[in-house]
Image (tube, rainbow, N blue to C red; front, side, top):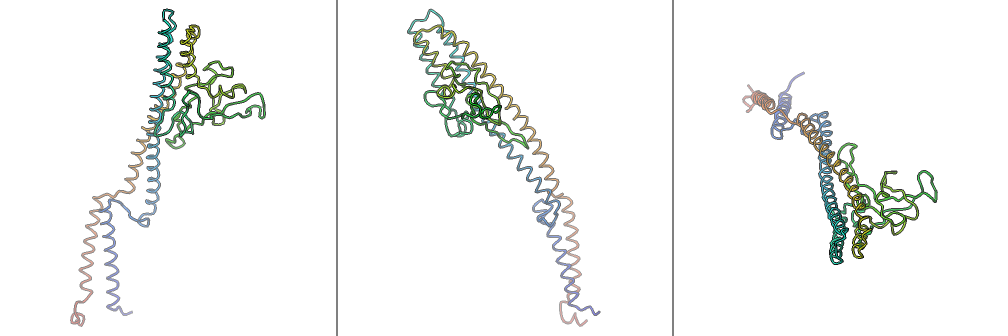
Length: 347
């Protein structure tokens, strides 16, 4: 077979383009610092990078969720601490009012302060975080209390007993649902505190007994066992605001027996408040540990991503120089193949 000059030129140009493309690819690695630009450059490496990018993005989202959850818990903790200070102040006033040496005018002044504390208690119960009411469960767009300190939300419904479906005797109240934040793979943290856990409710007889709203979890809802008599006005009445009313009214009429009885009720409410604060503290500590784990995971995954994508600049520069030499040599040889003039072709 006769090898024509056109065949030599075609082969030479193909090899030149191949050498140029190799050099251009290496230059792209130097410019971007990445081993590959297209999936075809390294299909396995690109697939691994996509997975790592997904993991890093997931960790970043979890960290954002965790930061928001910690802020919510901090606002809740501050609100509950403020409620604790109010209860302590009311207790001091109640002890002061139980002293038989107070005049009617003194009792009226003490009662006025208790009433002011009740109004402030309602304001704290309607605390918001980022425009959301923190004690209102899912219904974060609605305040927990009305102006009188009664529960504003219809937070419950009558259902049949789980142990005896259809029973007309045993009933349960389903209170607001909890809000969970996802702060890790299969790691959810309940960040809100149901208002009834803090402020309580009146029992079926109308007496104030904070022990009767002890909550437990049934089918994912916060519930409290009660009877049909508890359904109605009492179910909407806050225990703490009602306690403040009873104390101030007793002071107005100089009812020392009721005032003395209220001291133990305040102590019980404070004990319940400490339990709620302990739960919030445990959640905050858990979030801190989770945050440290997420930081460690982010560093590890970022390192793996760097090892998979980042080019070794020393090796790339050496390879670029080698390819430059190859390309220059191919240009020099090509100049001999492509004859510049017709005379040189005749030779």
